[in-house]
Length: 71
Image (cartoon, rainbow, N blue to C red; front, side):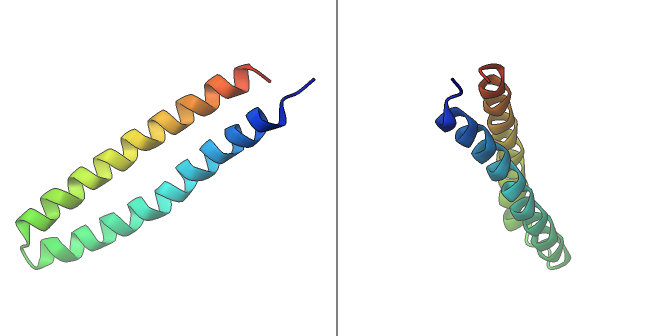
């Protein structure tokens, strides 16, 4: 019998990672605007947020892979 919660969680992990990509694109857009205004600390913080978003997606997609092994 397939566990519906495992299927749901797998789909959610993928959804969250995709959703994070939209946020990441916005971070990059606004980082560019901050660069134009020479807002160095803002750019540095946005770079860190982008890096953290990338890491978050790695963990989400790894979780999805583990869940998919159970199906």
